Amino acid sequence: MIDEFVYVEGKKYRRGYTSGSCACGASKAALMLLLENRPINKVRIGTPKGIDLDLVVENISWGQDWAQCSIRKDGGDDIDATHGMDIFARLDLVEPDQVPDFRSDLDSDYLFITSGQGIGRVTKRGLDIGIGRPAINRVPLGMILKEVQETIDELGLDIYNYLAGRRILVTIFAPQGQEIAKKTFNSKLGIEGGISIIGTTGIVEPMSDEGWKKALSAELAIKRAEGRESIVLVPGNIGRDIMVKSYGIDVNEIVKMSNFIGYMLMESKRLGFSKISIGGHIGKLIKLSAGITNSHSRLADARSEIMVANLALLGAPLELLKEVDACLSTDAMVDIIVDAGYKQVFKVLADKAARRAKQYMRLGQEDHVDIEVYLFSMDGSLLARSEI
Image (tube, rainbow, N blue to C red; front, top):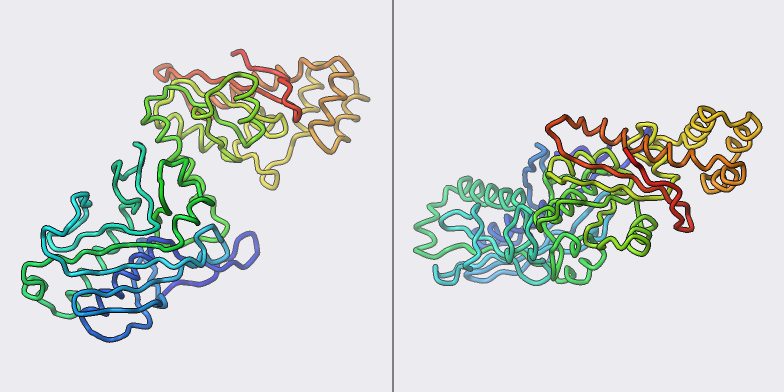
């Protein structure tokens, strides 16, 4: 069974379960409704993480050759847009010619999984699902197949005799999916028309960055699958808007990396981009110049120390160093530094950031990857551009 709570930095948080677990649980419950011809209030499924889940079954209905029900998504204390929505599975016994053409390679010879209302379709290359197919990832597909087979085995059912030539068609759907999808990353990932059924472990870990990172990786993979050789990484909207307005960068070449500088650099290397541009506010990218590859202020906030050290190496007087050190923001530092005639420090920081990025990526002579860094102030002015 799931250990409901975990502790992160001394605080207690509740775990949840993924949309993939919901789809799996609803599929298993629908099968049990059909085979046992009685209401099922709870269903137990296994997850790839090795944790069993007891899920409450809702919206139950069934007939002679069909059954459907839902599981309510619960993200625990790591709530996202899909938290609280109902994810349905409908199971129908159909003739072979009623099976959709876009079958998954994880389907069995008698079980086929498709999607209905509120589940998106893949429209771009780069994901592990083919274009035109339902946005149901391979792990949830495998979970559904496994639970259905185990249920049949536990009941001792001769499935082929029971089906008498028919097939089991499982349709995953979510009535709220199309609206909820507007609040997710799906459109950037090339998933249109609804949510995606995802989850690699079946469990949502509270305060976890892993889901966010996977979405960013998927966005990078799509850019590469489109044939792009270069990519522009920005921490957020400031960097994106400046790169588009001031430098004419195609917005489709830009990926927002949030605080995950190191992670996105390594993913860009793995995917084979030959040029990586990094553009953003100096308050974020000054950290990269010191080898800090996660820019979240709680993990590493050494902006004053980095600026003061580099100014000192340029021979700045002690009074300027003290004045800069007393600033509460890098934008306040910028004005003081420019007025004092030490704006060359920004070029030093940009060059160091580019070098640190290369070092972090462990680029060898065989790796032909160009890296450049743009540092901006909050008003969008270019403070420096690397040249290494």
